[in-house]
Image (cartoon, rainbow, N blue to C red; front, side):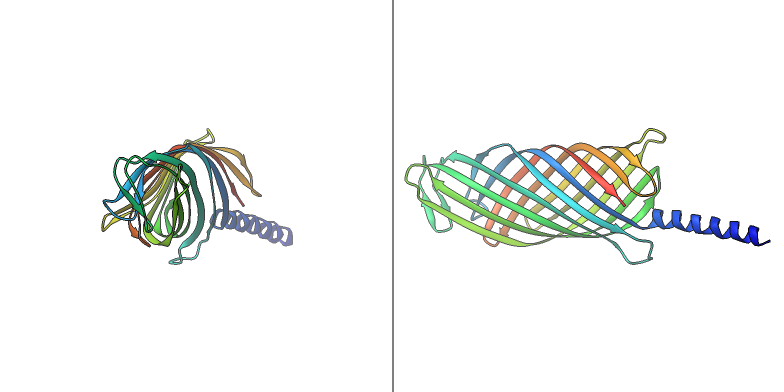
Length: 251
């Protein structure tokens, strides 16, 4: 009888451990992103200059925590950098932060942008065949822009920051017995001439899958749009697109 009770206890402990591993999760991931930048910026909705930006390699990373407590959302924090340089020859007068640049002036620009996403989300489905999450994101964005006349060195700069509320969606579709999954994820919002989105889709492969740790490799395509209307006097209509590779560790 004692042996039977001991065996039953061990079985229950094993099941409880497996259940906890399924319901509790810490995810840490990152990407190396090769993107192309295009678009315009300025100090007004109309007064914007189109620049030719260099292609850059950008980085992003995130950490997420999931739990089984009803009604309390899961949490995710992600950071992305969008830094690039560019130039243009003005076709008309361009005013930026108090400086006026005349037509035919050649301008160089430095753009340093980063944002942190604070996301709270719920899991509607969570199994090996389908995962679907939805929630809300508060995007904290910081931007620094500098323009400079390449001949006279006359320059001006502008710093802008603020929060943008966004809708969050994520899904994963598993391919049984292959280790491969299709995934898509996005934050987006559109209001008052502001359109901001950050979407990605791709394929992941389960390189490591055991009770202690999981490791997935990812590859896909990502697109970011920043159509901002008066973010601390900053106006922009820019896109960042390109392929990425990454990895996600699940404890």
